[in-house]
Image (cartoon, rainbow, N blue to C red; front, side, top):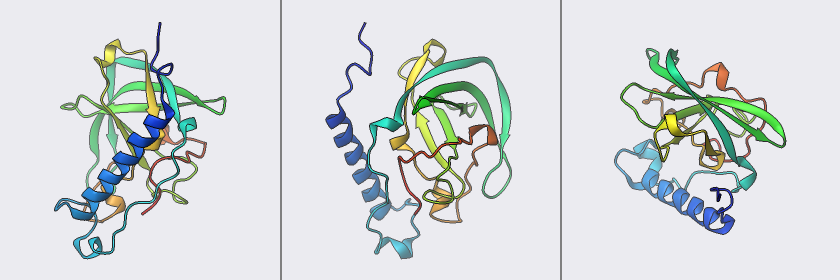
Length: 185
Protein backbone atom coordinates (compact mmCIF):
# COMPACT_ATOMS: atom_id res chain seq x y z
CA UNK A 1 0.00 0.00 0.00
CA UNK A 2 1.36 3.44 -0.92
CA UNK A 3 1.06 6.14 1.69
CA UNK A 4 1.22 9.90 1.31
CA UNK A 5 4.68 9.84 2.91
CA UNK A 6 5.93 7.39 0.26
CA UNK A 7 4.91 9.93 -2.41
CA UNK A 8 6.46 12.92 -0.63
CA UNK A 9 8.49 15.10 -3.00
CA UNK A 10 10.52 17.50 -0.86
CA UNK A 11 11.40 19.82 -3.75
CA UNK A 12 7.77 20.15 -4.86
CA UNK A 13 6.67 20.62 -1.23
CA UNK A 14 9.25 23.38 -0.69
CA UNK A 15 8.23 25.15 -3.92
CA UNK A 16 4.51 24.97 -3.00
CA UNK A 17 5.25 26.29 0.49
CA UNK A 18 7.25 29.20 -0.95
CA UNK A 19 4.45 29.99 -3.40
CA UNK A 20 1.89 29.92 -0.58
CA UNK A 21 4.03 32.35 1.43
CA UNK A 22 4.46 34.72 -1.53
CA UNK A 23 0.69 34.75 -2.17
CA UNK A 24 0.02 35.48 1.50
CA UNK A 25 2.55 38.33 1.51
CA UNK A 26 0.89 39.81 -1.60
CA UNK A 27 -2.53 39.58 0.04
CA UNK A 28 -1.27 41.20 3.23
CA UNK A 29 0.37 44.01 1.24
CA UNK A 30 -2.52 44.79 -1.11
CA UNK A 31 -5.88 43.40 -0.04
CA UNK A 32 -8.44 45.77 1.55
CA UNK A 33 -9.11 43.17 4.28
CA UNK A 34 -5.44 42.69 5.14
CA UNK A 35 -4.76 42.60 8.88
CA UNK A 36 -1.78 44.94 8.33
CA UNK A 37 -2.96 48.43 9.33
CA UNK A 38 -3.38 50.62 6.21
CA UNK A 39 -0.74 53.09 7.40
CA UNK A 40 1.85 50.26 7.59
CA UNK A 41 1.13 48.58 4.23
CA UNK A 42 3.38 50.83 2.14
CA UNK A 43 6.41 49.72 4.19
CA UNK A 44 5.31 46.07 4.45
CA UNK A 45 7.84 43.85 2.66
CA UNK A 46 6.56 40.44 3.71
CA UNK A 47 6.25 38.27 6.78
CA UNK A 48 9.18 36.54 8.44
CA UNK A 49 9.22 32.75 8.31
CA UNK A 50 11.37 29.95 9.57
CA UNK A 51 13.12 28.15 6.72
CA UNK A 52 11.07 25.24 5.38
CA UNK A 53 11.95 22.12 7.34
CA UNK A 54 10.41 18.71 6.55
CA UNK A 55 11.24 17.66 10.13
CA UNK A 56 8.15 19.65 11.16
CA UNK A 57 5.91 17.89 8.65
CA UNK A 58 4.75 14.92 10.70
CA UNK A 59 2.20 12.15 10.52
CA UNK A 60 -0.29 12.27 13.37
CA UNK A 61 -2.53 9.49 14.61
CA UNK A 62 -6.07 10.87 14.75
CA UNK A 63 -8.49 9.91 17.51
CA UNK A 64 -11.90 11.31 16.64
CA UNK A 65 -14.19 11.94 19.60
CA UNK A 66 -17.62 10.39 19.04
CA UNK A 67 -19.25 12.88 21.36
CA UNK A 68 -17.19 16.08 21.13
CA UNK A 69 -17.02 18.07 24.34
CA UNK A 70 -17.72 21.80 24.14
CA UNK A 71 -14.95 24.11 25.29
CA UNK A 72 -15.05 27.85 25.86
CA UNK A 73 -11.90 29.23 24.26
CA UNK A 74 -10.60 32.53 25.65
CA UNK A 75 -9.99 35.22 23.06
CA UNK A 76 -7.57 38.14 22.87
CA UNK A 77 -10.44 40.61 23.38
CA UNK A 78 -14.08 40.06 24.18
CA UNK A 79 -16.14 37.07 25.21
CA UNK A 80 -14.91 33.47 24.93
CA UNK A 81 -15.88 31.51 21.83
CA UNK A 82 -17.46 28.07 21.89
CA UNK A 83 -15.68 25.25 20.10
CA UNK A 84 -16.05 21.49 20.08
CA UNK A 85 -13.10 19.28 21.02
CA UNK A 86 -13.41 16.89 18.07
CA UNK A 87 -10.07 15.09 17.76
CA UNK A 88 -6.80 14.30 19.46
CA UNK A 89 -3.73 14.33 17.21
CA UNK A 90 -0.72 12.30 18.42
CA UNK A 91 2.67 12.70 16.75
CA UNK A 92 6.41 12.67 17.36
CA UNK A 93 9.18 15.17 16.79
CA UNK A 94 12.76 14.00 17.37
CA UNK A 95 11.36 10.74 18.74
CA UNK A 96 9.45 12.58 21.50
CA UNK A 97 5.67 12.08 21.65
CA UNK A 98 3.27 15.03 21.68
CA UNK A 99 -0.42 15.62 21.20
CA UNK A 100 -2.66 18.46 20.15
CA UNK A 101 -6.41 18.84 20.22
CA UNK A 102 -8.30 19.71 17.05
CA UNK A 103 -11.41 21.87 17.38
CA UNK A 104 -14.40 22.86 15.30
CA UNK A 105 -17.09 25.43 15.66
CA UNK A 106 -20.51 23.87 15.18
CA UNK A 107 -20.93 25.24 11.66
CA UNK A 108 -17.40 24.32 10.57
CA UNK A 109 -16.05 21.26 8.74
CA UNK A 110 -12.28 21.85 8.95
CA UNK A 111 -10.02 21.22 11.90
CA UNK A 112 -8.73 24.23 13.88
CA UNK A 113 -5.50 23.62 15.82
CA UNK A 114 -4.30 26.59 17.87
CA UNK A 115 -1.05 25.96 19.74
CA UNK A 116 1.78 27.45 21.73
CA UNK A 117 5.32 26.11 21.87
CA UNK A 118 8.73 27.10 23.24
CA UNK A 119 9.08 29.81 20.54
CA UNK A 120 5.89 31.57 21.67
CA UNK A 121 6.65 35.09 22.86
CA UNK A 122 10.24 34.75 21.71
CA UNK A 123 10.50 34.12 17.98
CA UNK A 124 6.73 33.77 17.37
CA UNK A 125 3.58 35.67 18.33
CA UNK A 126 3.07 35.99 22.09
CA UNK A 127 -0.37 34.31 22.10
CA UNK A 128 0.49 31.36 19.88
CA UNK A 129 -0.12 30.30 16.31
CA UNK A 130 -2.74 28.42 14.33
CA UNK A 131 -2.97 25.57 11.87
CA UNK A 132 -6.11 24.67 9.93
CA UNK A 133 -6.79 21.49 8.02
CA UNK A 134 -9.47 20.38 5.60
CA UNK A 135 -9.41 16.57 5.85
CA UNK A 136 -9.70 14.82 2.49
CA UNK A 137 -12.40 12.51 3.87
CA UNK A 138 -14.98 12.61 6.63
CA UNK A 139 -13.09 13.11 9.89
CA UNK A 140 -14.64 9.95 11.35
CA UNK A 141 -13.00 7.92 8.56
CA UNK A 142 -9.48 9.23 9.15
CA UNK A 143 -7.01 7.46 11.41
CA UNK A 144 -3.95 9.54 10.49
CA UNK A 145 -3.14 12.85 8.82
CA UNK A 146 -0.17 15.04 8.02
CA UNK A 147 0.45 18.00 10.33
CA UNK A 148 2.71 20.50 8.60
CA UNK A 149 3.92 23.04 11.13
CA UNK A 150 5.59 24.89 8.25
CA UNK A 151 2.05 26.18 7.58
CA UNK A 152 1.62 27.50 11.14
CA UNK A 153 0.54 31.11 11.06
CA UNK A 154 -0.05 34.04 13.39
CA UNK A 155 -3.65 35.09 14.02
CA UNK A 156 -4.82 38.47 12.72
CA UNK A 157 -4.63 39.95 16.23
CA UNK A 158 -0.80 39.66 15.94
CA UNK A 159 -0.97 42.48 13.38
CA UNK A 160 -3.68 44.74 14.78
CA UNK A 161 -5.59 45.10 18.05
CA UNK A 162 -8.81 45.59 16.05
CA UNK A 163 -9.10 41.78 15.78
CA UNK A 164 -10.17 39.33 18.46
CA UNK A 165 -8.57 35.90 18.21
CA UNK A 166 -9.00 32.60 20.05
CA UNK A 167 -6.13 31.76 22.38
CA UNK A 168 -4.60 28.28 22.42
CA UNK A 169 -5.97 26.36 25.42
CA UNK A 170 -3.38 24.99 27.83
CA UNK A 171 -3.94 21.46 26.51
CA UNK A 172 -2.33 22.69 23.25
CA UNK A 173 0.84 24.11 24.81
CA UNK A 174 3.75 22.07 23.49
CA UNK A 175 6.95 21.62 25.50
CA UNK A 176 9.15 21.80 22.38
CA UNK A 177 10.43 24.45 19.98
CA UNK A 178 8.54 24.37 16.70
CA UNK A 179 11.02 26.16 14.43
CA UNK A 180 8.60 26.22 11.50
CA UNK A 181 5.95 28.51 10.04
CA UNK A 182 5.51 32.22 10.64
CA UNK A 183 7.72 34.18 12.98
CA UNK A 184 6.54 37.16 15.02
CA UNK A 185 5.56 40.24 12.98
